[in-house]
Length: 434
Image (tube, rainbow, N blue to C red; front, side, top):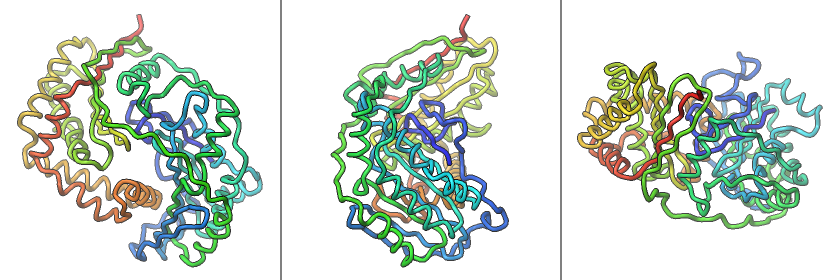
């Protein structure tokens, strides 16, 4: 059983902002045991989704694939790090960790020996318990979730020290999100009473949604959920803080020293929230700028001028507003000012002319193939249903996927990039420590 702590809108390490995954946490769908039984490709046979609302307030969605030998569950609470105050800091992480660790060692051992896999995740916008197991363990997993949900609050979490690199990221985060914004991460000062009150008030069935997918009988699953969750108190969670669009009044430049060999550069802009207009266009813009040897920034900075060893770009989605980020690792002997001039020139050209139709078609095809490959995993399909229910009110991810990559046009990508680059941004420079 594993617990994962996540800071920032990115859900796994590799997006290089505030993402942090504990050392023993997986970064993708885990191997299941035994492979010949649990790693079969999906059959494609599915039943229409079924929705359920229990007396406790828990909502559930069933995505039944009768021939699938596994089941996947995701219990997602509408409560994340953005809802914490300094005195309750770490409450979501502590709750996720407790949920992911069975209290009964015998049960934990039995689940693991049977190939079950459970991870707890605490993010900015929500807290999740995700499980994958052979279908025979469905009843035990549901009972475990319900028991932990009804258990008393866990211990006060510990806060880890930050190094120079993390400190630079923290300064970046503070520059992007002022104290009044829900995404501002205040200095933690957890107190037992505040953490306990937060967990009791926020982690309730009425504030959660469960998606169950894979090989199961809907009638039997409905009875399991009714038995496990139906008798829990129907307590409504507190309202969450709303917020307007995130903006910067002026450009910000931050410089730090770190234990690195050569300077590193990051440029970060506020961008449209996940699944909002402009989000897909900027996803494609990131790919057009930095994915593959033909990408604009790779061509100019890595291959032509040799000012950089590596360039990355990403549209990092979040519910209250995303971040568009470009990261550059400089080549030996690079003049940082020259690199920044070349980078800005490429961005200005892209914002003025946009991608060619051929470039866009290629980026769209790669994005679609990447998503289709990801959705071959049962856990990924479960998470996609959760995400679309939260943002679009539908769990039809095949149709949503097709629309997401079909709708953006070359002019739409250009206009989204132009609007983004017109706005102020934060520049983070890390230099080697002398």
